[in-house]
Length: 80
Image 1: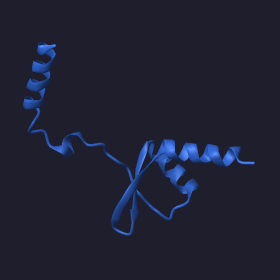
Image 2: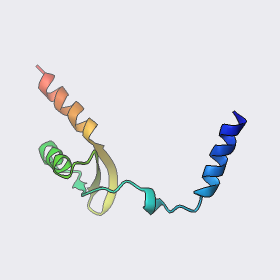
Image 3: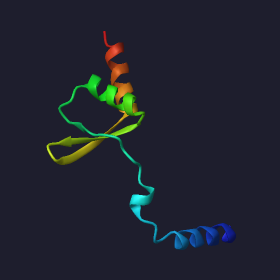
Image 4: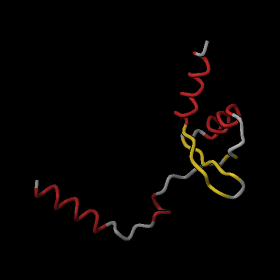
């Protein structure tokens, strides 16, 4: 166990100077919070992404995931 912990600490120290921009998820596009579900789904599918930043004007207000959309679609389709 001590060996694993030591290895982990060494790796953290080695990579401590890595910049966030070098490892961040690159997102293709964004969407307005007023966009409809179908437009959002099309954008996610077209860009082959799983997460999409959501903006209100110039302010980031959240992130929509493909899973959120598919769950919502499933709920819509199973309503009676």
